[in-house]
Image (cartoon, rainbow, N blue to C red; front, side, top):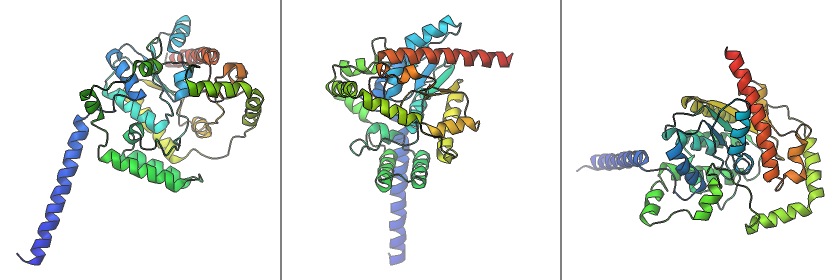
Length: 353
């Protein structure tokens, strides 16, 4: 065989191997389940799945949602206003908009038939940069090509420190996503008899099984955080004053953030539901989301981030720490949200008549 023909044969063989690999990877992606079965997102979705047609409202968010949104109180308050819903708390720790989009995709795969509303507190586009957890399965899962490209574009346009380290984490997570890393974890864990501990399930679903759990003082790390917060009341109140004085920057929302919001809207409406955006009370302004609402890109936006309007939510007595509400604060927030949501539903129905 001549040398040119040998080289051509080698190239053809390499291309055939690559095509076979891509084909097998695509096939595996179609048949393998999401998640490991052991993460909080899995626990919540596994609990939601057999009851998916019972619920008419979902709330997606981070730990602020887990700890702050009480479905039973919300549903009861709306019932008093003549609005009937059955809600489920789908908050996950550290969740940001890309991860919530992945959560929404997994919900869509379950084909719920009764959803009317999906509430979301997207927080922002940025991930909590934790090198130890940068390649957790929950992070790998949302790193498809399109979302990773948006994340890299957003990062390149920012002035944040560690841009190169963050970009490297995104690219590596994308590679693992394309290679289906972790996609058989649920099968493997089931075969090995691994299951989430009862305590982890209880902390994920709460005593009512609706996804809301309080922050427990019997957890050592949380107890330490709580005691530190109790001793640091003056520091917390100083932080609130600094937060209160922050002016809104004169900038438009990043195009990448708007693209993710548009994808969320499309996904929610494909479920036959209405999207509702919420900003929960925390010492972190969501200026991009606020600007998106002011420009008309999203609607409605229910805000609880103003210490002037919602002093009770920012009171030290309503907080577990600077980021999360305690049980008292959660009850106040849930009641306020229910009243504002009922007002919005009433206005919307009135406008349709």
